[in-house]
Image 1: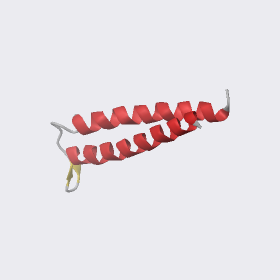
Image 2: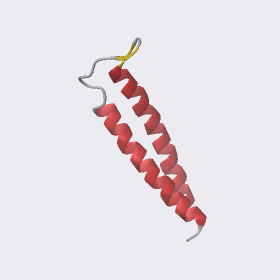
Image 3: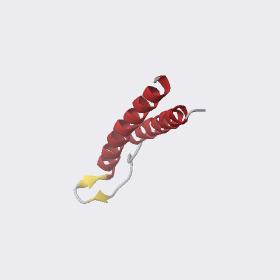
Image 4: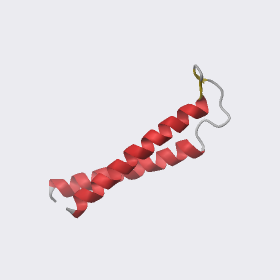
Length: 70
C-alpha cells in the first residue's frame, strides 16, 4: 500500500469522526447545563466547538478523498 493511499484513508476516517462529533455538539451539546466561561453560556461553547469541528472535519474529508483519487 502506498503512503498516499494510507494517509488518504486516515484523513477520511478522521474527517468522518470529526463530522459526527460536530453534529452531536451542534444538536445536543450544552442543552440543560448551567455554567460557562464568563458571558458565554455552555450552549454557546458547544456551538463554537461544533462549527470548528465541522470545518476541520470537512477539510480532512476533502483532503482524504483528494489523496485517494490522485
